[in-house]
Length: 457
Figure 1 (cartoon, rainbow, N blue to C red):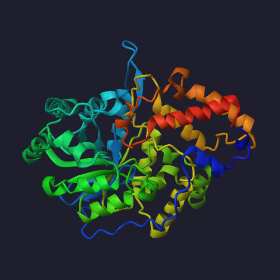
Figure 2: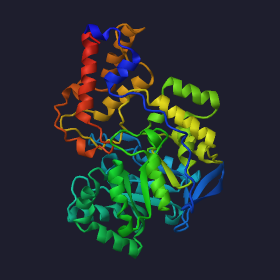
Figure 3: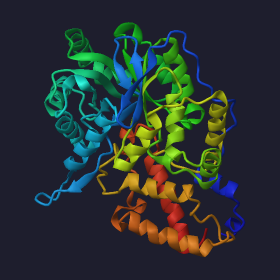
Figure 4: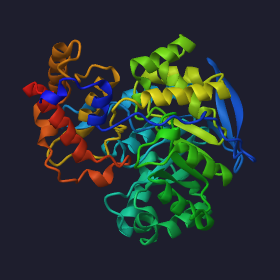
């Protein structure tokens, strides 16, 4: 392919399917007329944990929340299955509780259906009033009345509780009100859950949203009927103004919920971990401003600087993740308007890279053909972020980069689980909260890998 010899970085970005995003104005936090949350602090043995007071009910919620979707798994020697490493979970929860984290968010869909049980075991060691428990009605695959009701009841058993502090309709948005109605209204679950809220078995009822602006506008009108107590949105300094085409800018979602005085819980403050390992030029600017601050701390401070946010969820897999986040949220310092503008500049720089918007939630798994979709995307994104991807044969160190990309691809993803095995069945598509065209992206990566193998890039 002779035309590719002089492929520039900008041309590569276009070929890879993502260009630079337009420059926006400063990303300043909207001012709340009557905040649904107010700041508070709690002295721990290591410092102060920032709390937000939910003015609707007085809940004192840690600004750092624990998202129970990314705990470690290990192989059960007796069955060969992957199971949650309960000892690791217990240790993480113990440190989180000690550090002042009191909000724990799980789902029947997380960790191959094992997250609720693991959370229930870890949290049962503490007084029930010492933490807030959030889970979801994740009836993606079976929304019949029987299956939905059983999922709701099973969550009580798994989490060893007789009430939920925060209960969510999981992942609504794509398909608008019609899809919401099919999963929650037509089967009678909304009527049932509203009665459960009246009875106190659900203290706060809300939903998590992934979708386009018109879908959000359609769904938020249901507040008149259901009086949502909170809403969970994807929010970070990239999605604030530069969300992909299948999602809504978090700035818009925040402003609309702020007008309605609805507390916000935040998912994906690190965009599935991608904002903890940013491109070199983005990381350099962070380090120039504050050499001692970790890269993730900037993302968390951005989210926490918005007063309507009740808690920001972090899926802390390892103790070092937890310790770094505790450091950020103890003695929390909100960003100035100048810092928020700086974060907008960083978002623009980051968005010049041709990333795939995968947050490694694993909802697309298992693939019926054995393809490891999240790991394929994670490897590709990692190479792009670290600028270790070959772009053309005219590129400096092209031969070395080509060799390393292919060798490490085989290490990261076993051959039988790589992108070339995708047949385009699209069974993964309905499960992706980011609305990624998964088969299209897999085929794009496969073409890219094949061009490297044939040395025709």
